[in-house]
Image (cartoon, rainbow, N blue to C red):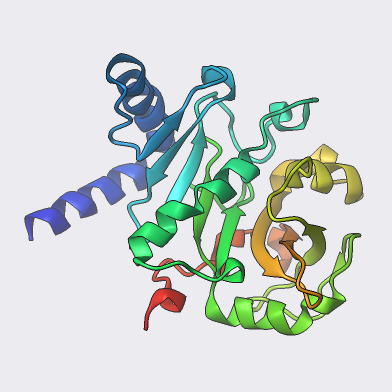
Length: 247
């Protein structure tokens, strides 16, 4: 009961304070890592290239398996200009590496296409610090992408099937890891008008094994349109109960 009350209190604080994630990382995780080589309360802090290019991995207060990647530099969200400068840190590549934390919480190795990353649009987020949700994908999303994955090509195009009742653009990237591919850049450079209005977009990355056996990623984009009732909340494609990890 006491633990439940503590978690409920933490959830209320985060909901009420849009800077909660930044304060946890900046005021607690980074100083503790620098002084004591201990990332607590984060699970990991990476500062090999300095605070300006580092990041922290933090267990989210929601769900059994959800983690967040949070840059140690101050970045408001998906619209932050520093994400699009030459040689910017590839935070999504780092978030994909951090999927092991999800698997540790799930107590099993998960299929590549069961794991996902999500960044909500500026219209659908509660925090004023960039954070990438790392967790299982919804079972129906995994099934739909398996069925329609062959139709997704190396150029952005509308996905024929809705995901969680919403329509997305999709592109495929091949490779076990991201390599030089940066989804922020792919969105900004290849979707018309996106660079000038990044805050209205949501990005979701789902691991994939394509029909020829090649590993890669399916990257999904949705443009928020409040008039049409579209908030750009890619996190809705994730399952924070991680039902795919259950026997």
